[in-house]
Image (cartoon, rainbow, N blue to C red; front, side):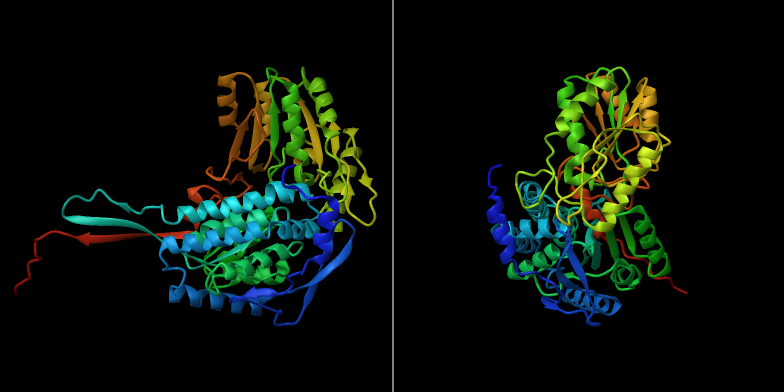
Length: 508
């Protein structure tokens, strides 16, 4: 709890916030060319916070033009990597200075608990940007084994204009995951935040100018997916789109690329992630703590949520009892109260969707071990942490990505059944395995079709490990690690002839 303020202090900050509501293009805020706006709503009470500029194709055209212009001038793209690093580190220092403002802004707009915004999202955002900034002048190009008569250079160059299309569940962290390597590599960037959570991206872009980033390098165009998002996908002046969000929308960006300039598409989409607990798992209290965290963190609005607990039938009842006990620690309530670990669902629409999944689970015959209802708290969108027991793999709650605080418990009889159940999904983003047997840990981790598999813990790795999915969870690149820089660069071969031999002129 170190570094946290009181509920009253956070509410005071919220009252004094100046909301950034206009697009940020070429270093300044501006209204959408159409003059249109849309409402952004506080999920904690259902009240409108502000009206955000609703950008469309005209605004995207302007942002691309300015981003391309500064890229061609080389003010950022050809800046020495050490100087780019310094600017990005100054931005991190500004984020640290404004961390309470940014944490409250994110909590108010997204419904995320201030506890997470303060202790997880802001620190991780700053660490990510700093890490990629530090990598900028430490990544070397290569020389091929070409012998003494030639020199083969393999160099990395920035792509040009990169668009980053963000989800609403981790607005600041996903912003950092994408702009960190894209900016460090020398690209100009256009950010399209989720319409539900636009304001922290706008504030960060403003701070980037204060840090010394040239105008036009980092632009933010808020708006709807069918307008601003579509315009980004179809724009011939954008060289790549990095997208995190639903598999349905990810498909659209592949279509947009095929119909326009074949821009590079990097997708991180949905997940229906398994937590596999084998019969020999040790310390079930430890396992239960990780199970609860994996499914309830951020109200289950997390692509890597372990929403399927696949557990050996011999220990299922014991583990479930412990998970139920741990769930009592996940207090739900007003997001700006640091005593609450769970806040509100992001929108009324999403609240209704999650409640629809819970209703379907009851109808299909799964047993509600805990929760299953909405929580009345003013006009906010709150749902009880919910656990279904006796779930079968063909039930919708075991197959659909619910993106809410809902856990499905699926009993299995052996390791083979556990792996089969884990892989019985169109997704493959993350998985966890709990076992005390080293060989089983290796065997099961390698057998599960997922981009990240954690053993005896829940997690996503860290900034040094690549993050992405198998199957319909995405492809085209990886967030995090040095590999993240690859998707924002082109590889060029430069072949230099060093031989002394002259080409004989052909004589008639």
